[in-house]
Image 1 (cartoon, one colour):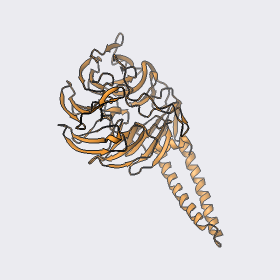
Image 2 (spheres, rainbow, N blue to C red):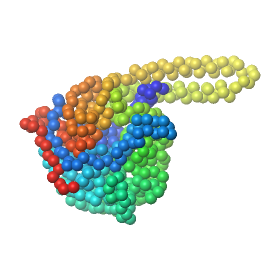
Image 3 (tube, rainbow, N blue to C red):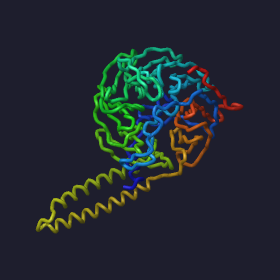
Image 4 (cartoon, rainbow, N blue to C red):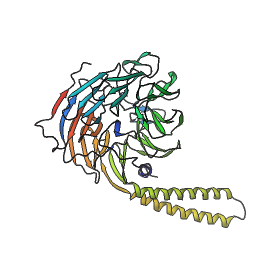
Length: 475
């Protein structure tokens, strides 16, 4: 297959798991990390307010090596890019985020941008908190898991993920030897987190009681780290492993089911029990079906959005839309043909140079030729499932808000109508837009300069000039 056809093969199997609410209670909106919201912005949005931190984010990992000499791979992609901005979650008139710069979690009023409350931990908070039933759950590099009352920031419980409180130098700070470097997933009365990034010291996957913080179960792995945003289905937890490939675990016990094949990275998307993750060393995403460790397909790209009957593929240089339903039908046909080809080829090989089988061998080869023709026809039809493809210079983030694709770039964010991909609007932002969220009739943009901007439709807010608030808390 060509690179494009391979990308289609991954996208074709991705389906939207469920309808999204207008709230954005966790990173990328849900535990599938879909990046899809029913929230929409009418017209060309304006900046309603900007909150600016005194200090920019302090990512744990500044970037990849410049090249992999052993494999001769150059211009490598960063594979641990989960904390380059203060990612926002939101519900109602409150937005929440953690800070890797001053170890706080803050709550902002979504209409004014003013800080409603803040809560200090003893280490960087590198991942967005999770909002569930009026409570906020998150971890810190101090090795603790926290549960706060979402409306006022009051501490409900705090649990040290690993009983030993040993501190070490790490990423320019003094942190726990078992920092919490994954997000919290809250489901069925339990909070799932990990602690630890050094396999030799043990990396702990833990389930806690959501109400009390008491331990429910614990599993320890000694071969993979755990860094990035956890994903979850009803039966599985998907644990990102930094530059390594994700591990799939049983959500009831935490026991590992498998480690999937791929090129590593902390970006991941889950839909219908298909895991897409990357970006590997060169910006390549892999797709793995539930029940398998092998990749179904791989494609060049940074992110993927799946909704309704379409998939959107987002790379460094372009974004494209696919008729997913039509392609799925063709992909099934192609898979069947490929299976028949493999079976016939095996028969031909078994005949070898045996005497008296010339006629049988000829018939098999004719069948193989016919199947090859059908395969080519199906492949050509797959190419026609491409609905549109447009150049993009905004490779850092993408979400779908209503009927608009919103893309984050260097110094700007843009909106593209999902129906056509044509540029709808463009707004400048300070820094690189690594974070996007949609809630409360707004889109929140987070940048590597420590800025959070609120974008609203002109009809929703008409300030004389955008309100600018700044961090008044002491680091």
